[in-house]
Amino acid sequence: MFRPRLNYKRKKEIWDPLVSSDSDISIFESYKDLFVLAACTGFINNKRKSLPKSGKKGEILWEHISKENKMALDCLALAETSDLSVLIDSDNEHIKKKIKIAEEYANGGIEIIKNLVLEKPGSPLDNLIGYINKISKLERKEGYLEELEEEF
Image 1 (spheres, one colour):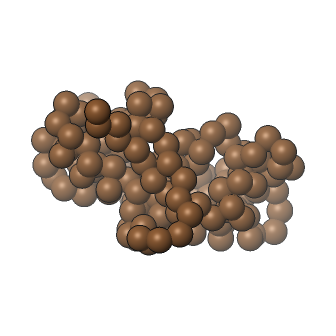
Image 2 (image 1 turned 120 degrees about the horizontal axis):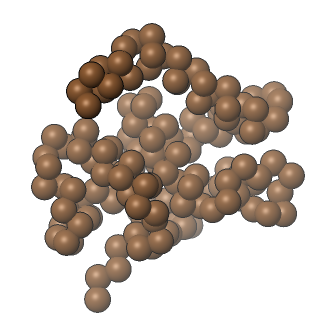
């Protein structure tokens, strides 16, 4: 039976402090939430990086990803491929393609999160909120949000 998984390069010094309940700087409730943010961050910054063939990897079962987070990953795959068929979850090849895109963007995005959230002075939560606000302002400034509102 095919059970799709999202893999990520398991860098304990990045992933664990941001998720672990034992950490003073934990921001995320789960690895899957951090994975989706990392994938979106990689996409926004055009940083797509293949996973190394060796080394410790973490994995998240596709079935454990929320409907909302799957929609975000669908959007990344659609933007990357311009192919509507990538949205079909009943086809294993489409799921594999979507997962590969998400994994590579997450692998690129986690380094950005490390630099902006963990290595920057101050509270990691405040740093993350500041980064999200910065991205939001850029989108408003460049008219992305207004264009989307007009489309709908």
